[in-house]
Length: 315
Ligand SMILES: O=C(O)CCC(=O)C(=O)O
Ligand SMILES: [Fe+2]
Image: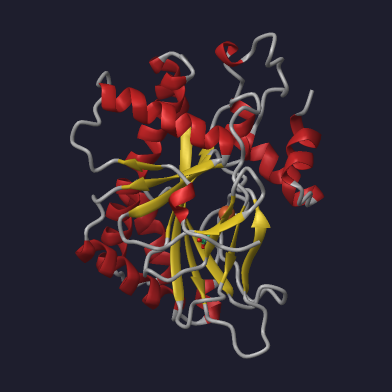
């Protein structure tokens, strides 16, 4: 199970000025994105819109946030399931995380900021909102590429995007002490539609399982974002897209690791488009209610991703 670098994973260059719909560069990127999601459940996006200054602001913001007293951190910030604070988990001692609901809207960021800092923290609020909005662009472009590659109408993609909602998960992992586990987060697939992960302060930890079963470590870089499909995108695609298996290991890191995940969820019931169903690909799933799926997971705690999806909505 040796770890190698991400160069076994396709890298799509979103810094390329020519990457505009209807160009050759766009069509070939659509193909790469779709094939990578079908093979591995993920790809790497090179994306330079999050500049060094913003990145540094966000790192400072995260340091401030995680340094708050535990009582403050544990406050409820959203009534949605799995959108809150997690920490002090006995078998994941390195891990702590916050969820910021609706981070692409300034109101969502203000609500969260006000709960954590009743006297305000404009810098936190604005930098997190700007950062999330830039990641939101990547989320939308990826979905447009996937829809286009499967020949599903643009209008349906826009409805899919507009009816979705976002969560920004802010994660901190401390380095392990001597004789302590180096597991930051166990192997899993996300319950999301799409997740965009960024190793914010350039500290190693994220590992991905490729289609042949071996694990690779993703080298951190300010301009590299891992875009991975969650369970809901797998269902939408009639099982053609794979939900990405990943985990976090703090086996190299000697310092605090911060990472960020922009997670998207569907607001409406997801139905597999007819373009994705044919003789070779008979319909595999019933219509999928994302919020109900989160409740289903909470109740049954099925860890095996294939079994979980199959039990919830398999035909
Ligand atoms: O910290 C990371 O890089 C990954 C986090 C993750 O997989 C999750 O929050 O679901
Ligand atoms: Fe994850």
